[in-house]
Every structure is written in structure tokens, then in C-alpha cells.
Amino acid sequence: MKLSGNTILITGGATGIGLAMARAFVGASNKVLISGRRKEKLFAAKALVPELLMKVSDIANPSDRKALAEWAVSEGVNILINNAGIQREIDLARGIAALDEGDNEFRINFEGAVYLTAELMPHLLKQENAAICNVSSGLGFIPIAIMPIYCATKAAIHSFTISQRQQLLPTGIKVFEIIPPTVDTELDRGARAKRGQTDRGISATEVAETVIKGMSEDRMEIAVGMAANLMNAPKDVADQIFRRMNGVR
Image 1: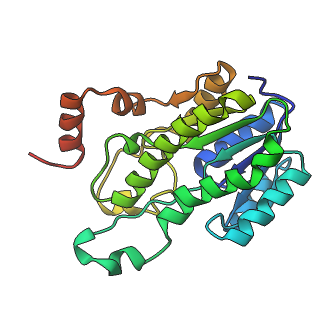
Image 2 (image 1 turned 180 degrees about the vertical axis):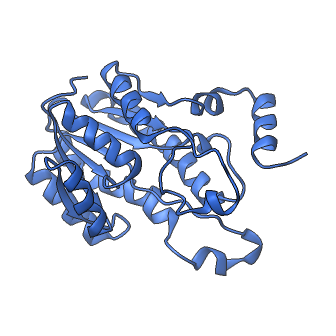
Image 3 (image 1 turned 120 degrees about the vertical axis):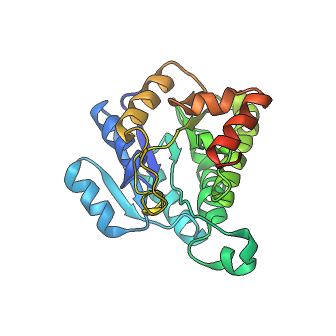
């Protein structure tokens, strides 16, 4: 697909993979809109990339989603990248208390993407070179057990994207899935360091470069680096990877 002259909305675009993609798309002569919950992070992103347009928005909040969609439509958006997400370690043995602490991964990682896309759908159906990009994860294929909700939401994004792509095929809207591996970002809010994980993953810039190349080649599933191994592993190999990732002997 054509990757210049577009208007692109990236949720969670102020940090990590979102910011790396924003910079790359600006560099490819696109107008880029970013959203996020933290105003200070948005201003920091704009200081790095002055061309960015930004809006404070919590996609878990229905009124925020509606306002974000209206803003994006007013700017002429034709590509949506559902990138916003959070990752939490959750001890399921603690019951409801563990789920109620902190931000809600269901609403941010899955519901937000589904409903924001629905808000924008009437507009996207009228646009040339329209596309939706949903960011899942290699962990949506083989999970890390200490992050059960995060992994489940990414598996849901993968399944939803397959159905969404099939349904929208007659409309001309292209539906991409971006499948990153472990990436060196603040997604886990320091949890990797606390558990002594020394491998921080690949750079967000590497992910962004792979995404742009994949979209330009109309690759609907863009698996980055080691995520391709998790996505394509046969059952017996996947079981071995799961055991290794989760410290099971």
C-alpha cells in the first residue's frame, strides 16, 4: 500500500513502539496523530518530533474514544494503528483483588481497540488507501503465565483481526496485524528489571522499520523477529517454548 501522504492515528503513540512508528511515518511524509493518557509523555514526544499532532485520550473511556475519533476524522485520518496497551503481572491465586488493582487490561488492550475502530469505521469506509493496523504480540501465541490477562488480550486481538480482515475485504480497507517480540520499552513499567530479566528485547526502531516494510509489501501479518517463531511453532515445539519461557522443567 501507499505509505506516504496519509493521515495516521497511532494510539499509545507517545512512547515505545508507538513513538518509533510515529517518527518513521513522519519521515515517510505522512501526517501523524498520536494519542495517549499521559500529557507529559505526549509533549515529550512532540519535542522529539515537532510535526506530530497530539491529543490526550484514554481509549478505555467511551467518551474519550468518541472525542478521539471525532478529532481524527476532522484531521482526515485514513490509517488507524491500534497500539495502546498495558502489561501487568497478575497472581490469579489472589482472586478478584489481583484483577482490580491497577489499570484494566481488557478495556485498554482489547475493548479500546475494538470500539475505537468501530467509531472510525463510517469515516474509514469513505477513504482511499484506508487501513487498520492492530498490534498484538508473540505472547498472544505462546503466553508467559505471570502475565495472563495481557497475553489473553493479545490472543484476542489476533483472533479479532482475522475476522475483521475477512469482513472488510470487500470494502477495500486493509487490515494488518503487527506482531512484536519482546521490545525494549516501558510497557512492563519496570517489571522485567524487578524479576532479573536481562534480555530487554529488540529496539522499538527495529519494529517500526519492519512494520513500514511489511505494510509497503501488503503483508497482512507482520511478525517481527522472534515473534515469528512463536507464531509459527508446531504444537510440540510450542509446548517446549512455553515450558522454557515459564521456567517449567
